[in-house]
Length: 289
Image (cartoon, rainbow, N blue to C red; front, side, top):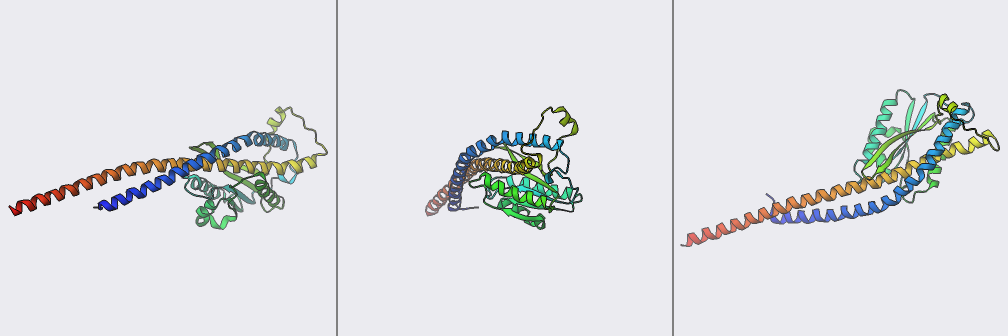
């Protein structure tokens, strides 16, 4: 049985841990507010741009631009968005497992499936599982996130697709719903999938290209890839802060329960020690008589 000193020391340790988890929850809550606003603000533009370009792609021939070309099942690239820091529950593990399942389920359909990861934790989680598939890792891009970061990643991906290094590019990220709810989302970035012929026929929108069709497509199609990556990063950062806030809240409540149990254990042990001392005093007094 643990001594009173050991129990008291453990209570103090749990209280210190609880102070840390409460502080981390408050920090994440403050960061979440700003990250959530950014993610929500980016959605309308990203969704409308995607809608217009998918509709536009349905009106064009497959060879109108390299980003519209479907080259079959060659090499594929998965852009996986995870966290750089831990203590955020199953945020990284869940989406990393989803990406791993995607690779396992589709490895027969492609010659190879490579991984580009944003976030150190995703790399650490998948290194022993699909380490040979990891081609590049971007770390610490969540701090001070801006469009330029997404643009550089987008340019790299577009260049790899146009050079035919990859024949398909997919995006995995956690879409933010609330502080306690994040939805694992899979999107195909490249080639851009057009709407069905029926949907194009039903849409009466007519497009005028200025200065010309190729110039417009060359500017706007890569832009769509960059915007979708930027949106994914914003959603992922907001989801990470939400997951960490929920995890730290749960840890704080668990610490309170543990402190209560340890305090009860300490009081019982103290009572037993006092009772034992009284019995020894009484026994000694009786022996003297």
